[in-house]
Amino acid sequence: MDSFKSHLNKFITVTDEEYTSIVSFFEVMDVKKKQNLVLEGEVCRTMYFVVKGCLRKFFINEKGVEQTTEFAIENWWITDTFSYERQIQTNFSIQAVEPSSVLVIDLERQEELLQKHPIMERYFRMIYQRAYAAAERRIRYLYEMSREELYMHFSTLYPWFIQRIPQYLIASFLNLTPEYLSEIRAKLRS
Image (cartoon, rainbow, N blue to C red; front, side):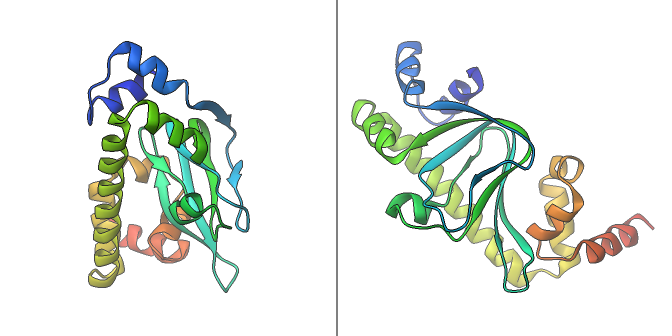
């Protein structure tokens, strides 16, 4: 739990007493590898902060293939923001990539948290701004870069993902087939 406090202090300053109160708004949840936290068609009622492990958000495309749109590792948040904010059915699923420990908060508890600790408004604004900026960059990369360039960029920017996340999930995230990703990797090694 100290990692969450350190994470908060990168954006805002909270005392030990404030932190104890803030963290009381969250539940701790341990999830197994491949455990689903949210399934497509459900209402995404919670936001997840990854204390340890890795989660992913994905949908199943018209060909029946899983398309990963987002990963969350330690100190990252994940949710379907549209479903969460509006409390409507989600078009995504959220699943653990590896055994994980997460902090969970629902919309009602988040509102109570923001009422009691207005500084958290600033924190969440900053988190959303960063997430939005990252999404904008990713969209541009998908349009501008070749598949090889996209993989090279991703592996340079996030080398720990390459070692940690199964290749088929990286392929899914980069909108490649696992076979094509294997070809790219083999070509780069030679």
